Image (cartoon, rainbow, N blue to C red; front, side, top):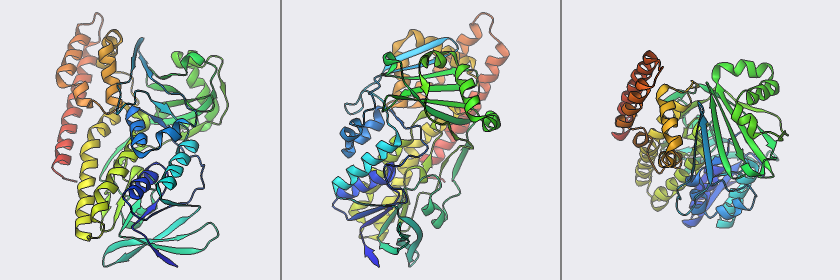
Length: 442
């Protein structure tokens, strides 16, 4: 049987629930369909900086998420080449801490919040096709957990169904407009956390090309994520747990952090990672969250952006759902906003995802920030989207770091100058890309 609603959403995790909450608040009849039954896990690093928690607060979900029991993380450290940066987070809409909540609890809390707001969420439902009329998408076909077929008709269909989006495939939007392959592969597991003194700290260590993190999360666990050079993926595949444990032991700061802790889960992997922007809107449809745009997890921006831009999509579309021309214009303007506001972080993330050892300039930055709490706090503000990456490492600061690296006794001048030339080339290419995005060029 066919049903009619105002908005049909495919997927009800972070992006889908955020869109459903926004729809319900706007007084729309919305149905979100998800093949999962919650609580259900999914591969995710699931760290949220203050800006991500502020989005949960806007959606009315923060209190429910906090009740899951993950500790607030008001402190952060970053260690590299013998220098340790530490600082506290600047508040974002009153939130001055990070939090790492496992996706089983986080997604279930968002679904519960959506239902409380008045949205209908149907679990165990698989979307099989889209409905179309006059060149427009006008709904979805689906099958429920018992194999029964149904249709939802709606003036707007939102695909919030992740990187392997069914909706993106059905509208021909899988091929990205922008694509960058990561130089890192991800391997993560949970440890029983015996270090109470670390339960308020989000920590990262860099050792050569290796990057390891420890984020305390709910149920007394700590998420230990390795973001290793992608070239090591085959080594991990051959002996996943053994290579994971050896790599943890080879990062001295991370190894010390885990003294007395016990590995209590299997090791999970995410390889072949690609960051992208897809075409995210068309007649009667839009993509949200990872279906539209994905960044390497090295900067932990995905959940915040999924929540924020799904909400903004609905807020743009809700007033004009009855006017197809106005709806398409509003959706296109939202897509341009998404690209404009995320492109710089996308580029910055790509640099951190290269899987290389720290450049001499990065070492100088760490050296300086280890002595200057204000500079360390600025870096945390970049992660929380308070400060733009290009304002943090501006051309003037980059030149100063190069000069300091060249003046450092015993420095490898050739390596310093090579890194400076490479950075200049990247900066110019990124500037041209940002200008194209600002001009609305695909």
